[in-house]
Length: 494
Image (tube, rainbow, N blue to C red):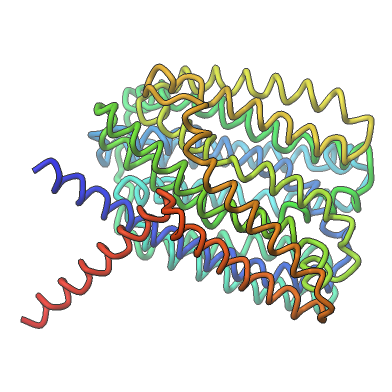
């Protein structure tokens, strides 16, 4: 009976991952194509300006959740009173936050020396209000693993926003094309989610329930706030100490590796917390989920990120044009950093699922202390030095995130590295083969196409030849899912 439950749980998680992955691929695919078009139509300075504003709106987005989304997902007996209470609390909080950023807009514009940013800040700040309406619906979908709803909502918003942003950029609206794209995307996404998800807030509110949820959630809020401020302080420093063009190249360097992380690691991250929360009292199951998540994510991400590193000059020149070539060093640094992101994600989700938000907050304080010290030590030596400080701090963060699970799950950092080493070594071998293709006397676009196909063949062949555990696991899961679908269709016919 236990085996059947494990298999059912595995299929449920795999199905949830499939829809989340499809949603991320669809959204990121459309966004990527549009960003390429916009990168050709707009100057790097325009992207730098929108990045300056996004620093503040991203930080405010953390308050929208207040950690309550994670609290709702984790709480075993969450009901309509819990969800409705958080919904009304979020609306009030978002209204206050938007009023704050509306009044602070002239100060933000003055800080950067761009008076025209005042209007941009006030309009883009509306995303905070829209997110407040959407937040609890997202938590409901994640808790019940209804990730198919995310697929339609995100795809609808992204496709509509793509058209809006492209048309406005073509008509010469500059930074307002990017503002309209973001606001339209989130608004349509929210509307579709409300149409497809049947949950609606009830006219009930409980301070007692809010306090109980906030007991877990405030630590998650503080952790997320530390993480978001830390992740954006580099952009803040670059925008202030250097030029908006430097900031644009730094952010553009994140584009390709972000595409990989958003599609794979974020998809697994979304499914992993509710899956772990279901079995939070079974340490062995949580340990196995953590291990499987790290192995599978790195197996999928490593070849893509190594491939981007090896094809960077041709990739950037062909896709974004030569004016974006200065972003290549940043792109490679982000690729190396992101390869190890699954270690962060899986370990932190295990800690959250077991209700240790106190430990989660302590880890964030330790990591951000190290990262901030490195940033302060390098910020006067140029943008490249700041980027390298991110890479070094990421190594420290891996060890810090994995440290508690050596006791909680009997699964430490060394064992985690051993689990991912085969995938990384195979990805490096593939990267060497892909780099060799670049030496062929072929047109750049053809070189890129051959590198992609050859790299995939080398990695998959090597996976099968050496029997990589993650490859075998994924292959068996896909066969089981295909067999289940075939069985389902057969039952329907009879």
